[in-house]
Image 1: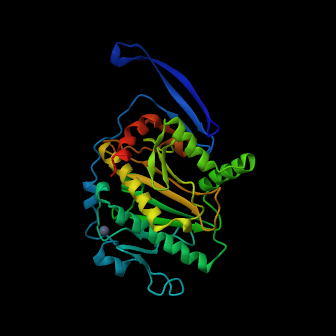
Image 2 (image 1 turned 60 degrees about the horizontal axis):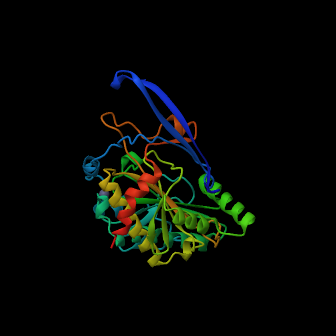
Image 3 (image 1 turned 180 degrees about the horizontal axis):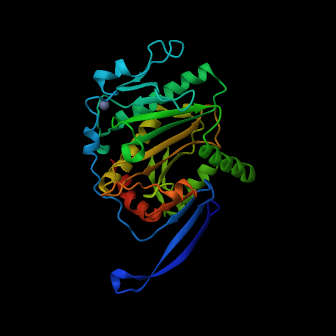
Length: 345
Ligand SMILES: [Zn+2]
């Protein structure tokens, strides 16, 4: 175990099994603490099935007639920026459009829709559509930085579909940009700065090199983007992390880098579809000014509900005890997802 993985211990559990004549059944729970993020996950190795075969068609059709992001309504019903931000009122790139969030979480809270398409299956999102969604966010951050050089941190976030908190089916991103990072980004930044002070090295480069050597959780590479299954996931169905260790701010991401990011996301989406998971949360975190210790990085957690009651995959353990119950063994997920990266071309 490296310093990136602070702790891993197993707790044996035994009970008399009613499905097997009350014979003694023993199993274990593996408690992991991530040395970089501080996340504690309880990995249950029982290979529970997630709600495989989740069907998003019911969600997809929901709200199509009144969707504010569809082409026929978007111009009239979504907010516009004041002219000092952008004369045209909204930022555009290809089919992607970015406008102020009507339900803001902060001063610079915006929404970016990827395309005119109301419901896009994961496998239907091509690299160009995905790329334009992220690039229009980069354009917006550029303008924000011109207006306020004190802004230091940004993130691009995605709740895809209702199980992940997505209030509208029409695929869209949400931005955060401010003088401070969010609490989780701050925690990982602190780890990266501490590592740099201690070793003189870049945490993200060393973490990726470690995962590549071990090949337990490494998934693959798309251009400058490195993909890894998280040691201690933040989600019940595991977590995919991506790192661009050679990039020092959101503005050092080239158009080509963003297309490579989109290419990697396509690999993850294909895996999710094959696994019957149709919802996720994603966050990409970066700085506005160069800071190699912070880097450009992100994470994606698959989300699901359990039928027939639509049981949430978030419960007291995560909400109140700050520990994550994870029913997907990260190394198993890596083994299953790696082929999707290998045959991407
Ligand atoms: Zn729509």
